[in-house]
Amino acid sequence: MPQNSEMSFWDHLDQLRGVLIKAGAVILVFAVAMFIAMPWLFDHVILAPCESSFPLYHLFDSFSSAESTSSRSAWMPTLSGEGFHVSLINIELASQFFIHMSLSCWLGLVLAFPIVIYIFWTFIRPGLYPSERRNATRAFALGNVMFYLGVATGYFLVFPMTLRFLADYQLSESVPNTISLSSYIDNFLMIILLMGAVFELPLLAWVLGRMGLIDRRFFATYRRHAIVALLIAAAIITPTGDPFTLLLVFLPIYLLWEASRLLVPPSPDKKAAEADDASE
Image: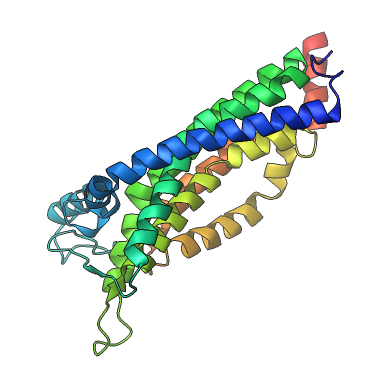
């Protein structure tokens, strides 16, 4: 039996209030730390994709040097970082202060995410059965790992490619690109957090599978639909015009789809076949 089944509603509410206070305090501590470190983080981490020294641009430089311009295929983009630089401007009086505050809070939340999840886990855990606890522990561990993998993919791959394309894109040569600080930060946070959420797809599939809402037959039935939907999502995340960049974003998301299939129970007919084989 769950340990806290005899607790009253008000006891649960009091415990939840304590959990929320602890989680808020942890996020506040990380946010303060990020606020103090923000000047260095801003120059060396957040603005790093604006410079030609960013690791992804070096990788494209190696591709460019290994293949001459005349022999480069049409689907391969010219994303060399040589001479690449994006200058940002601030057009609002209080923009830099509020960006300093909001970035500190968001980064504090991202870094405190595992601790916050653990704090909520201590509240939920007594109300679960032993088997449910084991499953939930695996789910929380998987969710944390996949979230940070998604954030890393967004920072090192998706956002630099998006910035590299959009910063040089011009509808007309008479309209030069002048990028505001707030626009840069909005896109930076949106893409990185969106990729972190996208990488939670295996966890979502696992939860739905445990609830009996989907099985592996679902992935086989809707694979073609998923490919089209994921291609559209990749095109939205990175609105570049070349197939190479689209493929770089699409492949990790599609691999997540296929990996999710392995985390859900097999279809009923496959279960029956496995049971018959075991009985023979």
